[in-house]
Image (cartoon, rainbow, N blue to C red; front, side, top):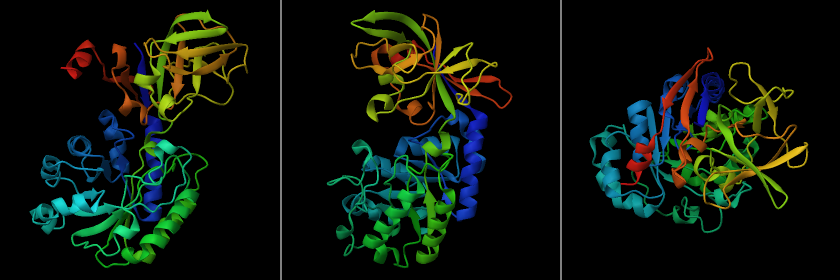
Length: 398
């Protein structure tokens, strides 16, 4: 059975960095559940973070049940029944349009939690400043549905609104935040100076825990922004919490040649189990378990002193294979990788960095057996957090 294995020590390492940044920048950092929502690991990271950000009612409910602390909720659109439930427990509720806010503002502002200051409402703004490289993930693209442009807000009645929320980054450094803040200030500076605006959520996409991320710049940017506008600042990374904390272990189940291509079919699917390899697109590092030890680079999870060979680009090593899935989708291909020795049925491959986003995007496509979710504790022991069965596949569909 394939398995996602998540490292407790790697999670703690990332969380310690985030806690240090929050303390030095005098801001609050929460876990973005859209990036990592394996609630069996929440006990590990809860002490380091201020809460969770949710993309709607279900994620917010998960945060309330398993994480606690602050819950920041934003959705591009809410249904009436979602608002009725969310205002009972979320700490922040952000709206994507003035139309949605105007629809629900009377209900919200008359609620006891809002009156007592336990519920804060904000608007998502669009600074119209693109810094990313993948069009699919650009919320500032022309005509974007995400966020309100400045022209729509300058003369709007913002009674009941106490903060603004922008999310424009995706796997980016603090230099991109710096240019984004300049755009935010240029377009929304006068609104930020209003006395009723007391907080700003700078969203996610900050690669804070990457080794080459300029954390000193991030800290200075936040401190300067707080001082200039007298606001509290929130960050809501998901990937930075769980980056390089987990792997997906798979097994070769068939090897064959077709028209000059050597195929290795695995018991995992790009479409169902690692969709960013098709969607982003994203190329995962892959390690072959064996007797060869690759210098330097190792997967996030090491088991029983195993030796690993890091797969290379096509043609760089002697034997190249197209790694594919046992599904009917012709394009369900993980990628072309080369190895020093031929792949054989039964060989184990380990795909690195498979904790964030991967685990929350998985599906039961084609009925392929779903990977287990396993936690590796600091002592090296493994704890199965979730085992998926045929019943899970059946129950999802009827």
